Length: 319
Image 1 (cartoon, rainbow, N blue to C red):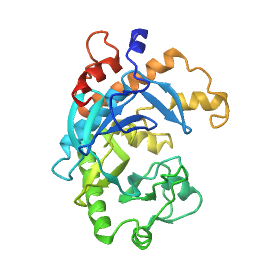
Image 2 (cartoon, one colour; image 1 turned 120 degrees about the vertical axis):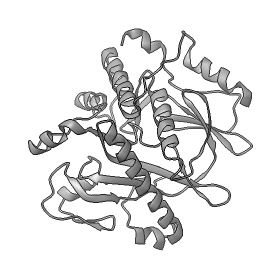
Image 3 (cartoon, rainbow, N blue to C red; image 1 turned 60 degrees about the vertical axis):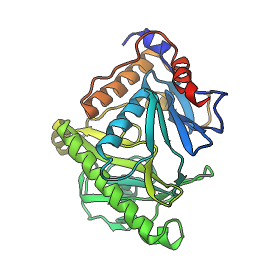
């Protein structure tokens, strides 16, 4: 990939003609009066609660990967999608997002404070309502997939691990909602693992976000099985690397985060300028992930029209 790709970057999607704007870390949203939401995936790369860079085609990769999975799982669970007017844009139903974040895991992996590997290494065996056996190694397959729910920190606080009993007792969800949501999550994950295996991949863990519509129906929101919401490993080398105690081979897009962390305190210091070559390499990783996951060739938009101008043109019907 040459530097001309840097001209195809969407840093933000500020469109004054659209109402009720909400700008997230990666996605820029607009709520229409009729109950629809316009969700535009930017090319921002977020880490350490900051924006590190903009990666060419990242927003298109996320939108089109999620589209692949929404279409492959529509028979399992209703989702929020109403249409795709642009490669970076989905029109969805506006939902009331449920206050529980759902992560499904099938391997002892992760680096965050709420990941099961972190908790396991701290000596915990009972977590999220599950009991894990002694003697598991880093990145080992679990006896079966488990759901590890956390509270959603809407106010900028930290997510906290929850058990199903706590979720119901605290009134975050009703028992019926939890039963439906957990059934959906495990079925979606099983479908994801099945399709990923055919592509030579292991779907290790993933995050789902659910909401309810005006009728109270539980609906899958946000994204599904994308490189940002999921961990994938390369199946062909997993056993050998696991036996050797090595980290499994993956779509490693975290080298930007590692590069920044080596040069500053990313939570406090100014972020150093990230080299152009690293930004282009990250773009290639995202594109390779899309093509491997979906089996489809990535098609960058033709011509030199700036991404935001193209999106404005495709969304003019909503002005």
